[in-house]
Image (cartoon, rainbow over the protein chains, first blue to last red):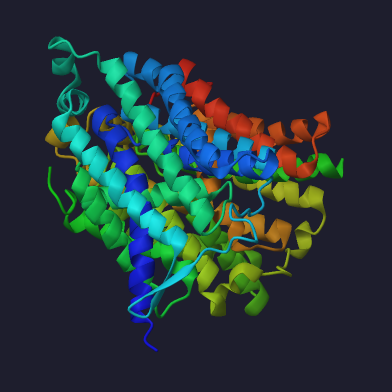
Length: 288
Length: 284
């Protein structure tokens, strides 16, 4: 039996997850112009809130998921209000913002490890092993179908929001030039806070989906975030569809790259792809 | 007493790493998040050459420094194309790539199993003697860094940090200077790696992850960028901190996470209230 259909399925699933992380990262980057490393922590928060509610407090899944997404979004907003906004107002360099977000990320990840131990946890209970479908010779689980559908749905939602709503236009205006946006009467701080909410909530979705698909670990945030950033840069920073293209390209390159190598090389492959792009096509696939 | 000597040796190793990284970050303003890779190259050179080929410790250190210099030259050539966020990201990528090589090149590094039974040189078999040797290395590297900072080379670097365009106008090949200091910093890290391998006598890839690079960055940002004393103070503080947490009575695994919480928050508060660190001359 050929292994290629399975590799394609795996690549698409990985691409869908990276799409979600890249979407949120891109939204925040395009309005604030700094690499928000704390974004990875929001994915971990999303996953662990679901874990805590369903496994420790016996809440139903349908209540836990929206709560987790909300919590991730709110923590994202708080990170902006309490930290990044203050630094922005002081006109701190993007390096300072990057280091601050790195510190915040490290602290949140370690707090989660203290609360939930650093052991690997799964969100799916033993009884409900999800159905497996066969697609042209590749196996895909029900969870993975949900991942794919969610990824595409959120991408379309964000795309429509940016294009057709007043909020979307305001977000783009702040991204183009914050000063000018202020002059024409946009409350830029409010827009950025909303962007933090949406972006972090999407990261929360990504985190809990990973939890259902493979499982949770406090350290998963950094890996997810780095893949999201690689996807965003390879696709073209600040470009919504570029990020999606980058995410799927990364998914395919990674999964086909480890075809003849061990899975441990995945991260190295992702960064080789990033460095090649930075050298030969720094503007990414879609130039903005 | 043994315990204090142990802490002092660890402090010397991290202070060497801090001084080397500070030369890169403090003097050029480029956020190099790949220092643990060169630390690892030094450690692996000593580990492999002393266990497989039975070479003298100082020879293994020299080989480690040379390999680290060559690798950092190649990485630096790529990195010199970037600045700002992209530099940090590409540097971080190289750390992950080098870590993957430690982990997966099993015929040489034994992968996740690590390398046990590394020889410690006979004349430093006692811990206090080992401490004296590490301290001498630290002092030598500190004065080398001081000398570099005060030399015309160091002044050009500071000028690059303040205004690269302006110094280019005077005919300086700025990328050459940035590359040189990157290689020097990496070679210093390899020295620390050799000392670490000979001291602990066992190494595995998990010591040389991205997290270690971030920890080193925290050391120099806390101490203060572009100040060699600051790098040493930062190392002292961040080495002693987890030990204090241990005395407060946290269990070991929680103490390890508490250390992460504390230094994460420390970075946040430094960026908010004192971005130049304790004794720094330069803000990111």
